[in-house]
Each structure stands twice: as C-alpha cells, then as structure tokens.
Length: 105
Image (cartoon, rainbow, N blue to C red):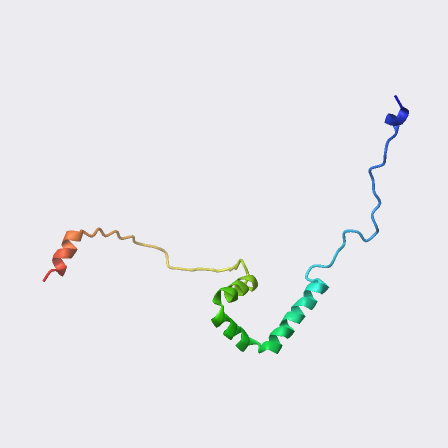
C-alpha cells in the first residue's frame, strides 16, 4: 500500500473579491433592455397600436397569448370592508306546490 491515504486535500476554493454580488435589485439585464427597445421600435415601424388591433383581429389566439405574457400573473389588493352588523337572519322555505298554485290563472 502507498502512503497517499495520509494526504489531506484542501476543499476550500478561493473566490474573487466581488463574487456573488451581481446586479442591484431593479436593474434590468442590458441584453433584455436592448431587446425590448428593438421590439418597441419594430412595433412603431409597423404602425403601433393600430397594427396590434389588426393583428388581434386576424389571429386572436396569438394576441391573447401575448396579452397573457405581459399582464401580471398575480394581482394583490389591500381592501378595507366595512358593513353594518348583522342583526337578523331570515330563513324562508318555499314550497314549490304553493308557487305553482299562485302562478296558475
């Protein structure tokens, strides 16, 4: 047997000083921002809103797919609802035979 079993390899790897910092929150990716600008420019060249309307009429399924991608998937709402306190609960049982008799001339 060899003496290699006594050697201990270091598992610590050195990272660059700025590793893991990334972009600050809210700063878009440059490529994404550039692509969005190109798409908006092409939309303007095609006729803008009027072109979208005509495209939606010709292919509503594609337009709805586009709409689904740009609308928020979740809508949050903060609501404060006030109402008068419930003071009485009424329960009415309707006999269908009585209703039929009242409707018959």
